[in-house]
Image 1 (cartoon, rainbow, N blue to C red):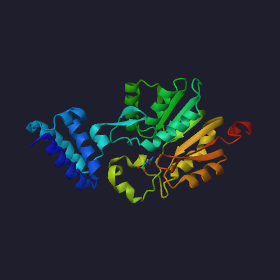
Image 2 (cartoon, rainbow, N blue to C red):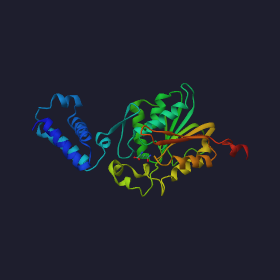
Image 3 (cartoon, helix red, strand yellow):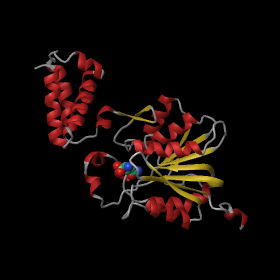
Image 4 (cartoon, rainbow, N blue to C red):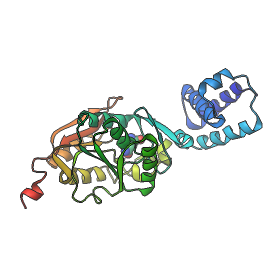
Length: 291
Ligand code: GLN
């Protein structure tokens, strides 16, 4: 059987098992074959009449079986691109989403190049957000926390590979940062409702649930961040939060209640309000001033 016949067969099995449109199934088959064979996709096209050795078939088949059982492509490859750079990913971290590039872009708008500002990322996961910010704004001092030490190991490795200077700390929200303040806090927190059926579908089944779900309405952590962030922002500092496509109004309400100013939401490429932010309440230092 030729390589192209193997590819066609694999695409058919992927389309059936994962309910993928034919185009996507063909693309996934090519990605899995190039990874399994250690070649690029152009090579596959140039060698479509080659016969595969039994070892090659076995290597590709092992990957294919895992994908057919639902494992995310990013975990099978061990890598996902984010903001133009490759990030190592393992099942200890959420797979970086293109939606989250909006959070990076908005953060960069508030971080003038060259300004030595303090930046915090809460829930760093693979480090995709934090490392992108550190590399785009080398003058900033970037700190990243995550409740998962295993996730931070992945983030640290990515920072090393991509040569980003980031301070990583294990912390549940702000607990490990009692008296520190930042000019900008960005977070892609877990925000899916605990009972949301999507958690049992697709890639999400294989991702760390503590990176995805947060209480009955998904807003538990966002509620905590809205309340706690004012004590950790410099005057005029920004809080930027990613959230679900239908949570913008609720998140704006939480920020307004917490006293944030200039509260806004921004839309992702799909047109969904995906990130909400605001400026630290006046008197964010009130704890000090009023004491
Ligand atoms: N955007 C992801 C999804 O819905 C969830 C990411 C998150 O919970 N932070 O698939």
